[in-house]
Figure 1 (cartoon, rainbow, N blue to C red):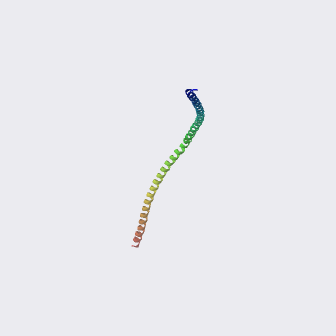
Figure 2 (cartoon, rainbow, N blue to C red):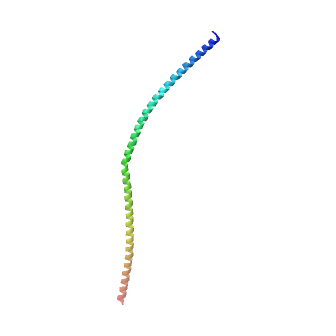
Length: 127
């Protein structure tokens, strides 16, 4: 065997080893990609289930909100009614207060006038 033949044999063996390692690497890569594909399929199924659950939840929340809306509307109407009643009560109280003040002034004038009349009539009787 010549030196050239030995070099060719070494190169052929190195190439064979390289092909074997590349083959093993490619097999491992194919297995990893298959595992990733199975995991992605599983995740996709979970995501679809989650999406369905979220859709149901949103629909349920919207139904509850539709049920609660009349309650808030009624509360707003009650607030308006209470405000109007408070304003009417204040107005009535102010009117009553003004009438009471007028009545008090009139009563005081009446008492003063009656007292003056009594004093004046006693004075006239003495004469």
